[in-house]
Structures are given as C-alpha cells and as structure tokens.
Length: 426
Image 1 (cartoon, rainbow, N blue to C red):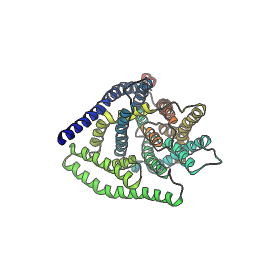
Image 2: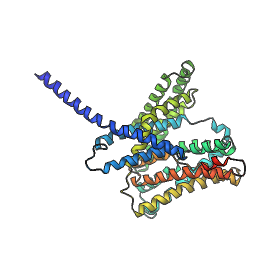
Image 3: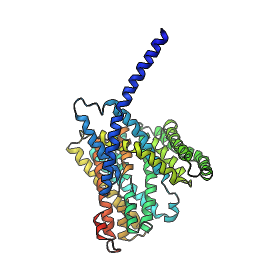
Image 4: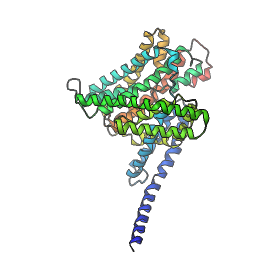
C-alpha cells in the first residue's frame, strides 16, 4: 500500500512538472519565429540582426498587458530567463574565441592609445552625466560612485561588425584605419569585461580592505585562468591536429566555457561572462578556432541567442521613464556617441593619423551592438543600473548602426568610386 502511495505521489509530481514544462514551449516558438523574421528585416535595412531580435521581444512583451493571458507568466518568464543566461555566456565565449591576438603585432602601439582614450572618454562622460542625475556632485556615496561608473562602463563597450563590413565593401579593411579599429575593438572588449566584473564585485563594499580583496580576487582569477589555460590550450592544439574538424572539439570547448564561467563566479566572485570570455580568449589560439566558433554560432543562434535578446525586449520596462529619465537617457546616448568619436579620434590623431583618418577611426569605434546589451543587462541584474535605461541603450545601438556606415562611406567619397546604388543602400 505504501509503495502505491509513493508511486502515485511521483506520478502527480511528474504530471505537474510536465504541465509547467509544456507552458514554456509556446513562448519559445513565438520568440524563434518572430526573432528570425524581424532579424532578416533588420539586415535588409543595414541594421544588426540583434535589433530585430530586440524588437521581437518588445512586441511579444505587449502580450503581458493582456488580461488573464497565460503565455508570459511568472513561470515561463523564469524559464526564459534561465535560457537567456546560457545565451549571454555563449555570446561572450564567442566574442573571446573570435579575438585575434596576432592582430596586435600588425598595428603596434597606436591601437593601445586609441583604446585607452576610447574607453576613458565615454567612461568619463557617462560618469558625469550619471552624477548629474544620480546623487549629484556634492554628496556622492560609495554606492553612487559605483553606479555612475557602471553607466560609463556601459558606454565603453563597442562592436565593430558593421564597421568591418563597411570597410570591407570599400576595400579599406586592411588599411591603417581598418587594422587599428579592429585591434582597438579587441582591447576595448577586454578592458570592458574587466571593468564590468570589477564594479560588480565592488558594489556591496566600501571598506578599503574589502576593495583590496575584490581586486585581489580578480587578479587571482586571471592568474589562475591563464595558468590552467596553458595546458588546456596545449590539449586543444593536440586535439585539433589529431582530430581536426571533429565534433568532440567544440563539445569540449563548450565544457571549458562553462567550467571557466562557473569557477569565476564560485571561487573568485568574478562575473560568469568574464570566465566565458577568458575561456574563448585562450581557445582563440587553436587552429580549429573558426570551426569551434561556427558550432557555437549554430548552437547559440538557433535558440539561446534569440531568447537572450528577445528576453531583454520582453523584460524592458517603460514604466520608469519620466521626464527626468528621458533627459538622462538622451544625454547618455549623446555621451556614448561623442565619447567614442572624440576619444578614439583623438587617440588616432596623437598617433600621427591625418584629421580625416582620425575621424574615420572615431566613427568605426562608435558602433554598439550585443556587448552593450550584455553590460546593461548585467548592471540591471546587479542592481547598479536603472531598468529604464534599456530603451535608450537600444536607441544608441540603432543610431550608431545607421550613422557609422553612412558617414564612413561619405568620408571616402572623394577617394574611390562607389556605385551610386551601393552608396544609397548604406
């Protein structure tokens, strides 16, 4: 009799789990279909595909306002959030594995100067704008300083995929401007990830000793990660030679990504995305890096990536936007554009670039895409960023994605002939 009760209880639990499980399938289907359709539309008009995925999320998020709807419930949103977290880890792992360390040798110190000023300017401008609206300048607490610095860190992120495509079309990808922009973007991502992790680790402490511990843990993570990474890299190089283009290599690469992400959070209190990025950075040196990255792209953009970007759109709240928030958001967008344009442009000028090429470098570094979304979402999750800033992050992505290719092509207008139909499609 007792065994029958146990079996009945297990059966009831399984039925309940099945019911909860199936509720997630409809939102997933809707996200995948609408995300793909809108991302294709975005690509047609020259915008990053992530813009279409975000738009899909915003449109689907309207369903939440329908009375008694059972699509985006608390349970399904929790399930989507879990899938989205896997997506952001894979996005940062892919960003790491796409990093070409060898690029540094081809560009020299110019990219370092461009990167430093390209981080300092938007970071500083974002900090000043945030200070004006968050705590003022006269009574800044430790918490306010960390929060305001995080807004600046968000603006420091860059994404040059559109710039690369434009320069490639113009035949200028391997020019001094092209190589400097690509290398500076690599360094920019590394610095941005470090800043993000550092600020998150410092958010709950203002004791000098605790700050030292947080910085020490981050340093220890990088030492440990690259110490472990050397034998891991050698193992992957051996596998690439012996089992080139075999599925076991990306499978073990995925495992490495998740292991580094887990270790970063669990042992060093460093953001999981930092662990993922470092794992990708280590594996960027293997001969099968493109094959591994291709498999990541397939896996991530089949489900995890669209869910991550759409989930941002679904969770985006416009309730927090009032007159003050709108002013803050628009000034932050302006700071994001001006910071990269002035900082990177000045860095290029210092390194001997002409005025026109300095302007082109600033334009090339101005674009934002998925990395800024990752940073903003991390800030919201950590309680360091007002969720009302997300719509303005989307505005910054759209503006820079539209302006950069148009202005870059116009800057080269007198140096090469571009078919009028291609110029019009910028």
